[in-house]
Image (tube, rainbow, N blue to C red; front, side):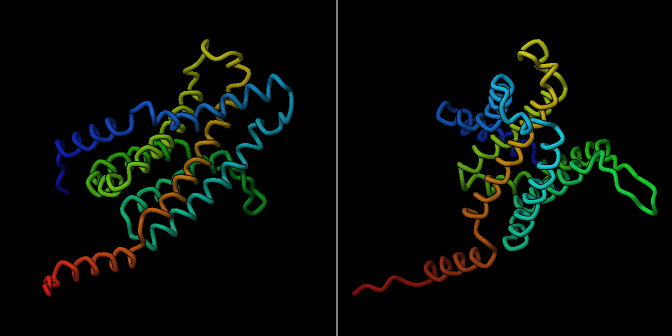
Length: 229
């Protein structure tokens, strides 16, 4: 594998220059809306079951399973490196959501623990992404909206992890009381936005056969001589 640090630095630099603009501030909404929702439900004391951790945990597993299905199908029909990478990432998210799940085998309960394993695997995903950065950015560079939306997804997950690690202790009101709800709600919205991103990818990224047809048509046009009357 040939690794070009300058290429990676250039791509990342261009990414941030294109994404970090005032007109793209909407990408912060998937992380901010769930926080506002939790405080609204808490203070209004309505539909509080929506912010219960048990409900959100169950919903998260369904959401990441849906995400995995969408990305796996798209990766299979498109053979696109970005879709393949994201499908594997969605699989890891599914495994992560199985943490603390209890199943019974031969009348003996067993508890699934995946957090520690997922941390090591995610580190491997980072290394894989660095090695594949040329292929990944080749797709992202074709669609600026993909770049912006992807950052919104990443920002939402990072924010949920910051909340989980009590990074906003003393900053957010009632943080100690609502920490669990804030974390789970933010993560749930991250899953939802990831699904929207995946559906958008299905729309804009051509499948392998479509890409082949487009390429062959371009080859025919370029090889056909101009005929002057």
